[in-house]
Image 1: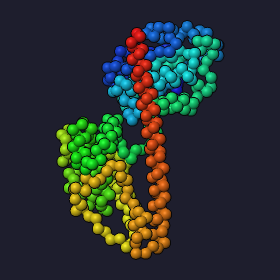
Image 2: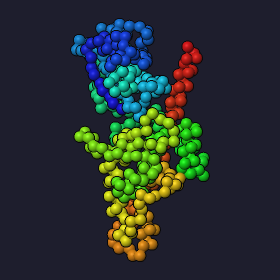
Image 3: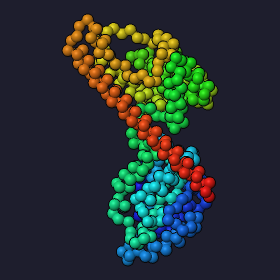
Image 4: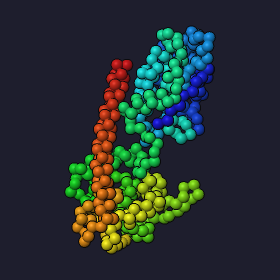
Length: 387
């Protein structure tokens, strides 16, 4: 989530900019998806005229008429194409103003006509209070506070995108299908991978990209070099081309030629699937795997892996293969290097348990956020009934 604050000496100009001249930026026909007001006598009237009634009460050293705040959301947070998300964005802005800018007039413009077409909010706040005619204090004008305050309120309703690179890059639609597939997998544990895939297709919860991610990680785990990796993927119906560019460096282009459903384009760059699917990340996995392998262990895995092995592959299993402590203990001898591996594996297991606990907490938080969103929708419907 991105935030910004500007200070305007001409509040009328700021309001006129947000309202637009009948059309939006970048060729968009529409400027605003929604406009709402706080402490305005006429919600659909001349906003500048209503604010100017208080501007004249400002002191002689009062130069700024409005404080203009922008809150922008990534596609992972709120979508401009979802009416419910637009409503949530407006609700967050209203709660933000009421809590941190009380007794002030404000107009909230919800838009998505920017260059990146992200859902964003323009909040035009009257710098003159309607009660004591004082201007905003220093805390209300400091960007660090605005960022903290807006994040605090938004986190009640959505999961914030911290801007860090994601190991798995999924769209909101993919995330929804993934959540549904987890529920189906939970109640159909007896199904193998192919049977589960058929069930996902039948219930419209299948994502060919998610299927590709599963197969690619499985092929990566079962091989130790790029040649075997590409050959094994081809047996699973995915062709791989390695390319390079000055800007992005090396990358893979995967093509799911044997995709079980008809889609317009079955190709996907490694960058669109996530960071774990780049040539650099996959090679790093193989290098790490080679370091973990005991000296006495001989290489036995090749590209001749059976396609049926996917039936036993679960997305819930760890994508990184490690040597278990029992495998080391049962070895012919335990030297210093193996003991170090035992300690490292034990540490990895402890980290995995901590990660599971963290995942459970995130799940509980998402449930609370979902309930908050439902409360907003219910409140909105009740307001519509009373109107």
